Amino acid sequence: MSTIVLATDLTDASTAAVVWSVDMARRLCARLLVVHVLDLGRLSGLGRHERIDQARAEREPLLMDLVGNIRAQGVDAEFLLWSGAAADGIAEAAASEAAEFIVVGTRARSGAGRMLLGSVSGRLIRTSRLPVMVVPGDAASG
Image 1: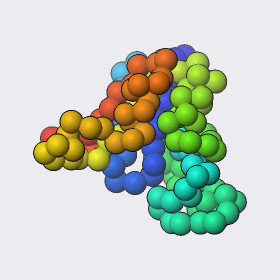
Image 2: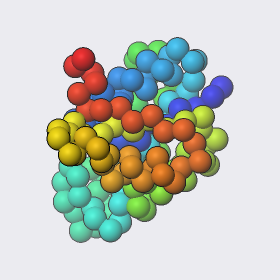
Image 3: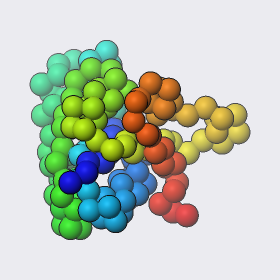
């Protein structure tokens, strides 16, 4: 069974990427591996924490819920909670799981911001040895 990595920051910016990757995993009969990276340099995002154990305790239940929702849609899914720089951690997790490609969301941007992708998605595109599908945050709404 092939594996698709869904990289998520667990914010609304990832919602369209979740929808797209679930649909793609279903079509390809692939396993969906949900990857969230705790960036040790800046434990931010949902809540700010000084300790990694606090960040992990906050995010594990959210990942379990997300994987449960994906499984309820008939897709085989698991999650990895990785530590390190986000783009590097996503690429390492994908390589360690022999993934076919990576799906990542990006925030909707206007004007000059459209020309530049977010720091994580942009770095993944430049450094990953795997194909990277970047799904704009507004893709789910049309």
